[in-house]
Image (cartoon, rainbow, N blue to C red; front, side, top):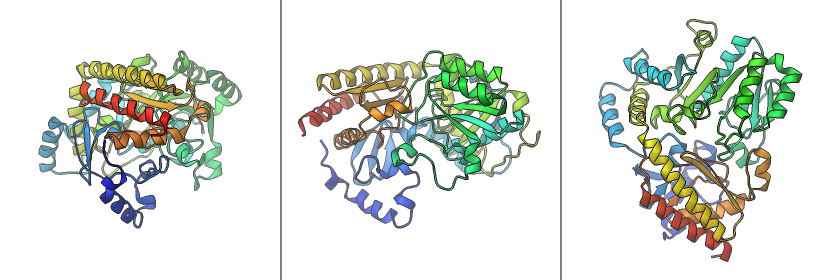
Length: 436
């Protein structure tokens, strides 16, 4: 067992310094540990399934840069490819063959995508996809779901998930009311409510956007028929269906969630894994929709670093390794092992918990299940999760510093890693019961 705060002196010093020059000391809110207390660990290096902080402490990592690192940290093949790529230059501001190669791979993997545009983040991908949907349909309203997070574009920070839930701020300051009024927020997994919305204003709705597996209120899978119902409703009202697969794309399977559930959206937003850990985003869909984008159409969107050769290289290498499917079989095996071990552990400790998992993404909720939407989060005990988080961290296991974030397995996690983590969870959960 690791020692705790005294073993993280340099991280504490760096966080104090960071707070003088960065808002909250971080560049993304959840990293600040506000939801769990204490100060964040500052990472020095990472390899495989482990990260090492600036104090020399080593942790089995279940954050994985929030999902992109499905192969683990610093995969040797990616490192070799990136070293060669950087020697040829870091950015050109001109087309490369790499962009064409990765675009073809995405189109081959996702039947709903006939053309794709690369951008630099998931937020940028979603923002652009919404603009295309509005232009294509000549409508303004969008429907999103409470608890689903699609980045920090103005029109989507309405009952946002993850960070906004963690911070207790349901609507971000700085978002104009007229923009927010064009966004209708529905309850995830509540198809009847969506039906009512579409009956009322469906002819004004440009698109319905959804995380096909919610990953930003913790992992929440779709109920049977929910995604299919969204597809039927959007077709009936001639609105577009957008899948935000920034997390699920190439995470829950090579064909993404749309392949897993057999539902074909009109537009798909991607990020994370398609850049192999480098900054990236993409949006794509049917040809006639994507031809609205400049220079073919009148929807303007541009980016200096879009299609960056380093991100394209990492994405190509990552997808090449994922393509044969063997990694997904291993991830499912590890995920099942983890689920069974954790479930047995909290049941033996007589704790009321619920573990949601889809493939290699999962969340342990401290509260009565099932957790199927944002309203169920009212039963969740975030304080108990905070105690669990710190107990695991002290035992050398890094979980997300928020009850409302997904944990991720990678191909680098061995059976032994999972077993050690289950043992750490057993000690931690027992400590929650006994007060130790």
